[in-house]
Image (cartoon, rainbow, N blue to C red; front, side, top):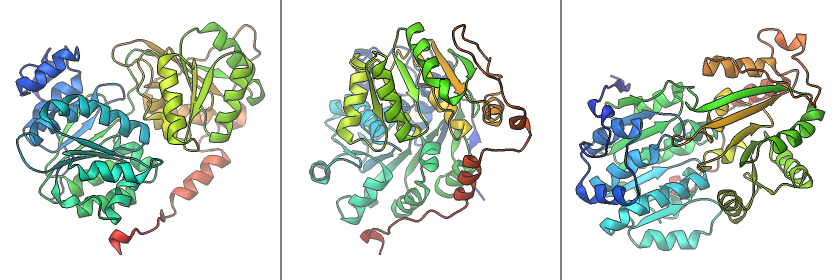
Length: 421
């Protein structure tokens, strides 16, 4: 029998406060100090089930408080039993943010955490592991590095969280996740959180979870509730001029998405030439550079942050006025993740996308996913375009997308660490 997630209607979802969710008073006091008054829908539904020790598949869009949906139950349960809680995250930035969220709660129970991420020195992480942390947050590749050197012994894991699971699969982590799961004890609690529900997520639930309960807050592909969207059809060579006009029109912080690292660098230079402060965040930047970019964006040092999709999941910043898709994403699902960076935690936000005349099919894919039509806008000072006739042919895709689809069929190859030889 396969362990497909069971949809559950939890009466706690209507709970207007954190009281009554089964949270111990010590954590309730911490939440009070943190000014956490009203649980989000995913917190109301997931926390009571997680505290009971149930396996969970949580589906909710970004910015809905998923981290505390598993951090609160994990700390509470680990305070009552032996073992380690393990959290896997797709990016360094997200892992760091999860670690920060855990520390606020775990500190009150004298629990230590360890954050294991690539791009950072191994030795401090080894030292953190030697201090017997109760919670380990890691990116998959770096965790395997530590496992291969016997720094981390997986047989003490009693709770596992896969955060942003769909993104980890998109980034090619499936082989590493499968390896890690095979070395973990079968007798554990597993929680999987994702913004979308591809079949690969169902496969993980079936193979590695015990009768998981599905707590779905919004259907897969649902965009943030308070974000408004618009689309400009513009030639590639006119994008920079339109960007300059929009940066003059909007006065708040702007998160801009580029499809490639190379283009991100060019866009940052262009924005600086326009007189705006900007920085970039992508996989070619060192961990220190990425931290400076993110912290500078939060503090106001940089008005514009230019990012690629690989770094987008770690950008948890409230008050972003505008998300600008300078390039449309390669995958329609990434559109939902991108625009979810604005309109977070009850704030309103706006998302603008640039589409070139040959990208009708890409726009159609997005509209099909979000079940809405992107309103096309015009700018009085820029001559805008329309979709070309050839791009309206059903089933046509750009050469880049065809190449990507062909590559997706090839098996992912990765070096076998010593631990598995």
